[in-house]
Amino acid sequence: MHNIPVLDWVAQSPDLNPIENLWNYLDCQVQKRKPLLKFKQELINVIKEKWRKISIKPLHHLILSLPNQVKAVIKAKGGHIKY
Image 1 (cartoon, rainbow, N blue to C red):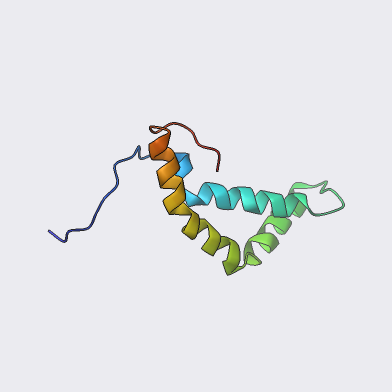
Image 2: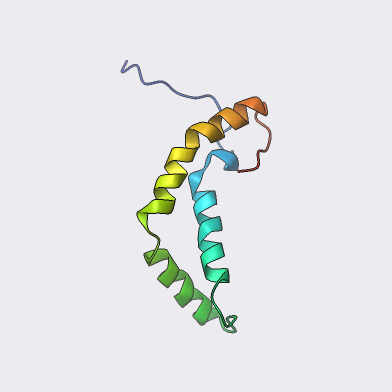
């Protein structure tokens, strides 16, 4: 109807879901914080703070990496890839 190309892949493939990589990026940012957090509310506050401070650069990188991730998943015949 609109001639939009669609890729065939497993709908639940975490390797092709950029949010998984963004969660990992956020986790790394939180882990860099010293001293270590002792209370749940501290962790929640730091996560919110780090989330608000995510710049466009890592988001842009994630978007630009998608074509290579798709190629890697195809090469792995749908199997897990290291990305």
